[in-house]
Amino acid sequence: MKNLTALLFSVLLLAGCGTAVTYKSNAPAGIARPADYPILVYTEDMTVPRPFEVIGTVSVKNSAFTVAGGSVDDVMKAVMQRARQNGADAVRMTSIDKPDFVNPNYRATADLLRYTDSWESIAISEDEFLAYLKKNEQTLDPIEGVWFADGQYENRIGIMRNTSKPGRDFVGFVLNPDQPSWREGYKKIDIARGKNPGIYNFSFYLDDFSAQRTTVILGDVPEFKLIFQTPDGNETITYAKLKTYASTRAVNPPAD
Image 1 (tube, rainbow, N blue to C red):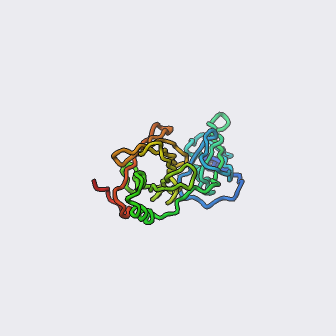
Image 2 (image 1 turned 180 degrees about the vertical axis):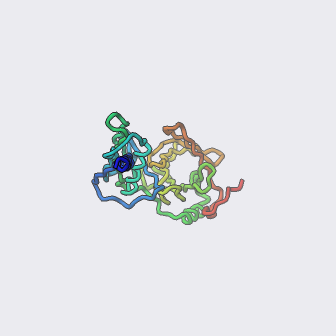
Image 3 (image 1 turned 120 degrees about the vertical axis):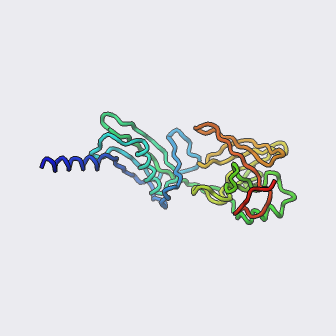
């Protein structure tokens, strides 16, 4: 009997050494996200770059028979699992509590966010865009064309004339998304002409859809560099221009 009691006690500890996850719904859940979908994470003092609604609140707390253990990673894993399950676009952390004498594990509360706007998309296929470039080859602005980032030919954007928004002369859009939160045709850059030829004012949208504004000067070399401030320091992206208008779906490096 003594051994049986000890065994049952051990089972209770093992069953309770994790955390209890509760969820309060504010709106219907969306389509579940795949396991690799990049859910963006914000704190309360950070600005979410797009309009949103709170679809629910998830809380990760100690379970009834919790023993010391766990980590922030364990808590965040539980939050992100619920976020993907409910089709959230982003998570806003409202509290993260460290272990203390009463609570041996980390605890957290987070709002699950869903964007309520429609991101601008350019309704043109890659083949149609290439046809536009070829047809208007003699009158294209130097900024127009197919650009690829950091020597990665599969990471391409298109730039073409577009004045459908006030103050905008050109728009850059995604030709081949490299992550599921971005789709083909999504706007990547709003571009306005500068005061002098070859100068352009960019509003470049990062992976989390926040805007970074910078000025680009095109010289004799058909490339431009974008330098952004990130929490880990400055990040530089170099875009070079493809020199031909053939199909870029199976592109080779441009000839010199």
